[in-house]
Amino acid sequence: MAEVKVRKLDPVIIKKIDELATDKGMTREAFLRAYLNNLAITKDIENVEDKYTALVNLLAERLEQANDVIERNMILEEKLLEILQQN
Image 1 (cartoon, rainbow, N blue to C red):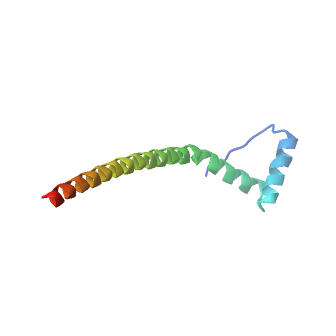
Image 2: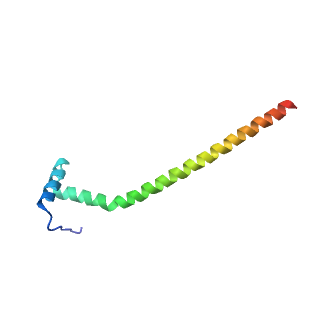
Image 3: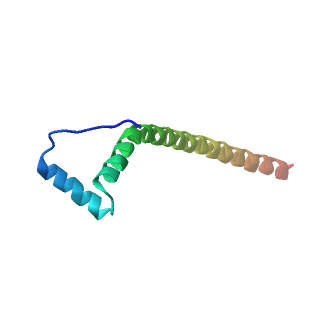
């Protein structure tokens, strides 16, 4: 595994990171590793969410179109039944 070092961090920032890690029951290193892992995949997750949203929107459009077709067919069916009943 690669090693990453960060130098010259403000002691206040380090203290805050330590507090956040402690609150989660983690060491500073484990906390930062998890945070960096999440940071690295955030864009991928956003891309998946965007694709999912686009798919949901497309499906909603298709459902509306299908509903319109069903409504038109029902109207045609009613007219056809009226015509058949008149004969």
